[in-house]
Image (cartoon, rainbow over all chains, first blue to last red; front, side):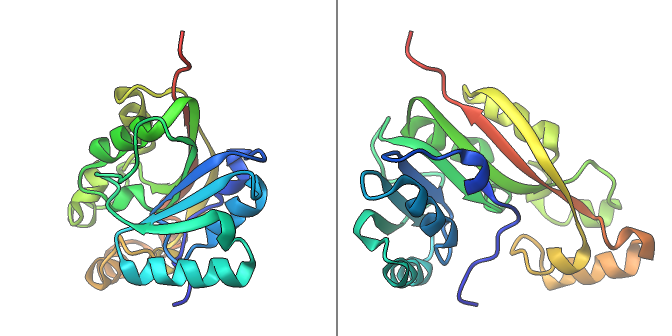
Length: 145
Length: 71
C-alpha cells in the first residue's frame, strides 16, 4: 500500500496556520504531512516521523510529487523517543498511531516535550469502551492503555 | 484504549484543554486495515461478535489538547 491508513482527519481539526512548525507522529506514507505542509506553507515546516525507513522514503517521494518537499522532511524514529529538541514544534498531529504504542504515556510525554508552550496536539485514533468480549479485548495490550 | 483513558493520559503528562470529538463508528472491515489488529483478532471478532455489532466495534475520535503557555 502506498499510503498508510489513518482513522480520521487530524489535520482538519488542527486548524493549522501559515508559518507553523508541525510534527506528524507516525507519518506513514505522508498524506497527513503533505496536507499539513499545504496549510502551513513554505514559511512553516513539517517533519514526518516514522519508525520504518521504508515509510519515510515513501513520504519523501510523495512530498516531492506534491511539491511540498522544500519544507517537508521525514525522519526515522520512535514516538517514545522523538529525535527533536525541547519546545521546537507548534503542532503535533497523529493518525491512528497512539494505540500502537505499548508505552503511550511515554509517547505523550515526548509529544509534550517537543511542543512549544501553548503548542497543541490533534490526534485521530480508535477508542473502545469495554464492550468487546474479554478474549478480544485482552488480546492486544494496547487496548488496555 | 478507552476515550476517558486517552484524555486522562494527556492530562497526566501536563496537557490542558483536552477535547474529544468527531466520533465515528468503526466496524470490523475497517479495523482489518488497521495495524493494531492481527488477522487472528479480526477473525475472532467475526466469530464471537453478533452480526449487528460488526459495523461498530470501535469508535474513531479526534483528540485535541494544548500545552500550557508560559506564565
